[in-house]
Length: 531
View 1 (tube, rainbow, N blue to C red):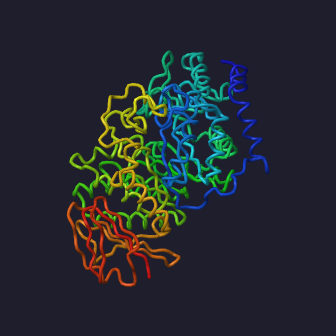
View 2: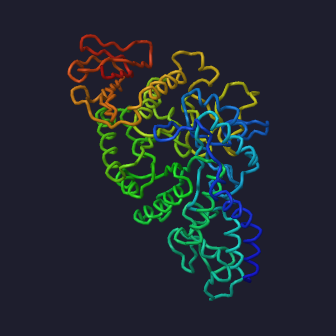
View 3: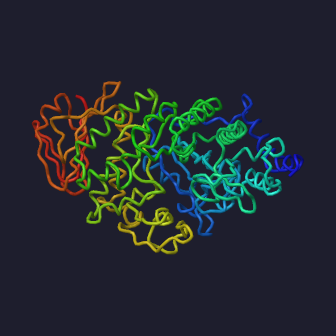
């Protein structure tokens, strides 16, 4: 392939996007966020798997305008941010293999639709976080196609020459069949593709690739995006925490140089020690995976595999470790996401109370909490990925125009709990419990911004009790009965100087506090504030 050939590919596939990126980054040209947009920490974010959430045009595919139509629903639940899974063009339903970083997939709408979504979110004081997939692209991305074309034309035994086609340096090619590499058909070359052969890994050490990443961030921040969810940060350099940390530092510095208010949260599906090491990059947040999923500390505690006090100790220990690594870190607790089985299946014998308490345990952790769509009504879905991304269960009406078809090849699923429409008027539903927990979290800043200290005299195998210390002095004492039995506790010592101001019960029984005697029905919560 000639240098002229590669130059033409660049011209037609890239130039317009770059010009726009440069223009929007000029002083005074970047789109400003309207007054009222929430800043700082203490956010609650609703994760939306776009193709499964809400269909606006009756084609069976969730889309951007469908999300716009449900913003009031999301806001009224108490969320002030949304995270959309990838919206860029891609041949797959999940879109985690991007064809074009600076466009919108036609199945989801247009760029004007996306800009309208940003505008309407900001008018409601809501943030929008974009899923940014940098570990790999699609094999159909113009960068990879240009590199592949060049290597197909390269004579056998010749070395690559980036001066003829710079895109061969955008990916990791080798003549050897190395770990994580797959053959480039029709050539003597292999390319790194850790996730799937149709997802070639980018060479993130390339200065040219890093320049592209700057331009991509500038493009979307210029549109008004408030931050990025960073996909697969432990796979940037597989098995190399030091290199991953350096790249996260580059991403943080790049994003903040464009927009100092840009928020970054990374997917680091790993242990707390590695997460702490990655926090030394200065990144705002990393998802707190040790608490999530069926194997995480929340579920293990509720299944009796860990003690209630272990949940408290875990919160305090991770807060301390992450704070030492990055004094400006913002926690990112979550319970499930699009890669995990739905939580309703974690507790086969549960008819609601345990599922309710799990959501509260997530929302009562510090930092910016994240919730996967449908968890507020206890949706089901497990096994293959498509099942975990089932259509939002708005109602049980098969003709409901909002309901999507779901991903191709999804199994027929039976939901364990009723639809949203059926739950809204049921005082004991998961939905109404969720709203109550969200109200409490939003009412007491110390829940999200404070630090955890174990309440030793109350904490035991079934009761999680902790102080949430606040710089403002508005400390809280939070007590959770994580068992299926009523408990009575002498709280006179721990609650000295406090008064009970909130109580939440998953059933019909009520929490009571009288002269130091705390009585809690099964799966209930008491919140004390300083007098």
